[in-house]
Length: 109
Length: 116
Image (cartoon, rainbow over all chains, first blue to last red; front, side, top):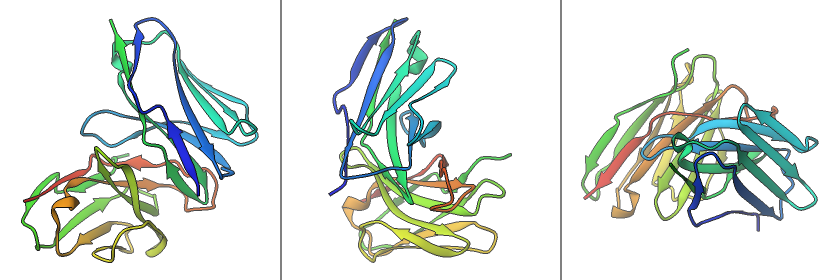
């Protein structure tokens, strides 16, 4: 069956460092992969989308990579700030969206 | 453009009752999806509507139903509420339908449903 895995444990990063979150999947061939940010009690906010034929996508301090051979996407936040603390969700798309459970990121001042 | 709106924001119901939640998508968006989110289960897909037709459905019992109107506004209904239905219900709209290319979702603030 299709499966998406994100780090279930919270990720603690020192302010100013680069935070790297992982999204692994099996038994799936997504056409797109999306990343979202969710704050407590709020709906997720779309951040970035990367296509299957793209290796890397950047937006300001955010960078996403997509390796269809490894079946993995990495989401990087450079120069992290406490305001970046949130839960980050990945979602795979191929006609419909399949969601990961999310990774909680904590940026410590 | 105004974002996705959901009403009500908070709701308390008793077991056995039914509830209707409403969602207004971003203007011009024809696709509306509904999700249930609980701390233990994460984001669970309920169903998706595009141009008033249900296009995809998640693995939920028939007590969960929805519909979409000609103006793209959507409602979801849960009948015979159970304690386990307590959750944050999120609505999301998208400018494209399934299979039409990148399908990013724009979420509303959610409706917090508590069943007692």
